Length: 183
Image (cartoon, rainbow, N blue to C red; front, side, top):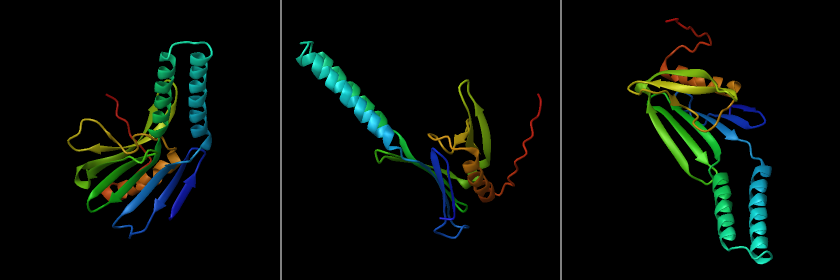
């Protein structure tokens, strides 16, 4: 591990097991919070206990218990869909592999060939609720930008080293200056 950086939500690791010219690996890891899992299971238990109370003591319909089981299953499934880690594997001779690892163990991968990447870009995304930075590729033959991190929104200081590595791998001079044309 060469580079590491941490904030309250994410941990950035720059992995260098191989020569930098061959493979450059960057990981954004979600810092674990035991409180999130505890509260999901705690509320699932409260919902189930309330349903059994209504069924056994108040003699309500068994449908309440079934609905609470369905809601509990939804809450637990929602917890398992959370992302554990997103990785960017830069192979200058071949391309870039984008990998998302979920808490449930599921891993999704996407490979973008190096000759298809026109330019890696850092974008500021503004919504009515929040503002965050995003790292994307302009890819030849695709109408939309390819997001490097689909699920996570790491801070700018974690995105810059990955952006610089992508610029170096694609042979594009990385610049923090941007130009905008009117029209």
